Length: 339
Image 1 (tube, helix red, strand yellow):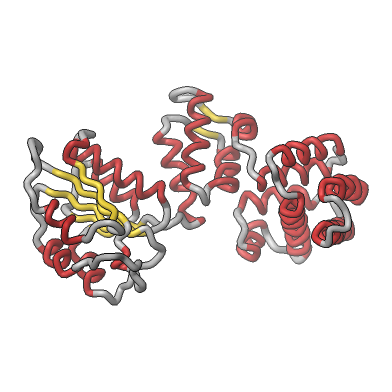
Image 2 (tube, rainbow, N blue to C red; image 1 turned 90 degrees about the vertical axis):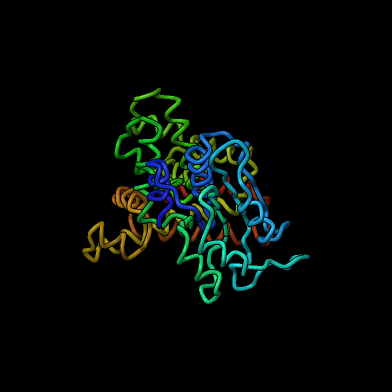
């Protein structure tokens, strides 16, 4: 089950005795933990036990799980790094006796909630313990979000922060940081602080507030180049230098942007719609939309010339024929002439 559905159920006081959370998205794992702490313990952590299964065997964790809680009706046990669920378990100085866990999940005590965390991309479905857990526990998918689910999570976090947002601002956020749910949360929280409780985020607010990443900066640099604004392009580059960005990496990002514009132009010439182009290339719809707006202002010949300039400068830098910073500044001037 998705973590969003599980957390919603927990918040509605529908709590299961055993949970198995697997996946690499730390934000989802933390959301699940906090929902259980709030609902099971009312935020009081005196009956919360945390275990690292790389340091303690599962049988000792279960001994705690079967011990009555002090003072409160319920106790919560969170045990992470359940490597015995992987095809190749981690090498440890002790053994996990998973037969204890197989028995436990078939008849868990009513006073203990057990959350097992397997922060791995895959579990070994062939193992008996994995099958038992899938049969007798609530399995929570905490994998990194898929592109088709990004908007749903974005909307959820916006709602959670009690703000509203322009559709174009959502597009910007989704294209820029939606593959990093923690960064997405951080960016939306920053916007919520800016506009206040119940406030509205405009596209201008989003442009001003979204943290500069290499991707967003390369987009801004492409705009400066295409507009012939050498001063702005140079300022962006100098800002990147202060952040210790490698000029070779920046060339890679610029090359990607211009190749994207060229691919969109070629597909558009063949009569493809925006939706068909997005499906063909596999990029985010907002990225395609931006590329389509840019391709109108530049010819195929110039795009090919600019991509060639980028490739030549990349080669010059990698061969050490010119100091990187100087080579990049000369490249920007040549790109603006070519544009």
